[in-house]
Image 1 (spheres, one colour):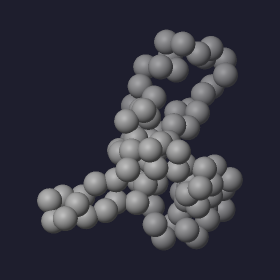
Image 2 (cartoon, one colour):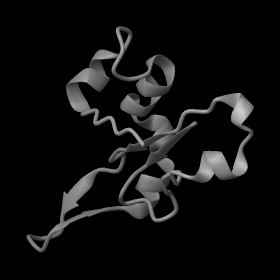
Image 3 (cartoon, one colour):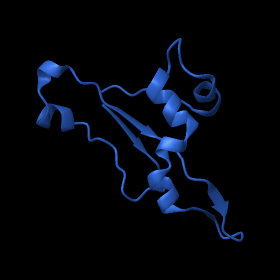
Image 4 (cartoon, rainbow, N blue to C red):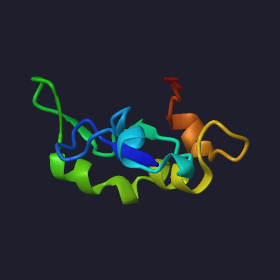
Length: 95
């Protein structure tokens, strides 16, 4: 199970650690991966800070080449797409 979340997307969220144990059948052997990725372009707000359009962050997942590559080829394996290796950082956490 994979959840993609853009920090600028007000309607996306990570899958909680206990979600699988609480709501899904353990016989399915589900692994959870939460991916935080900025899919919306970040703009300089006239020197006051950086902003992104929340709507672009909410609907931009299917047009971001990194998201498509991670779904198709994964991450941190021999088949990982070059765009993912070049533009993404992988931090693995273990419960």
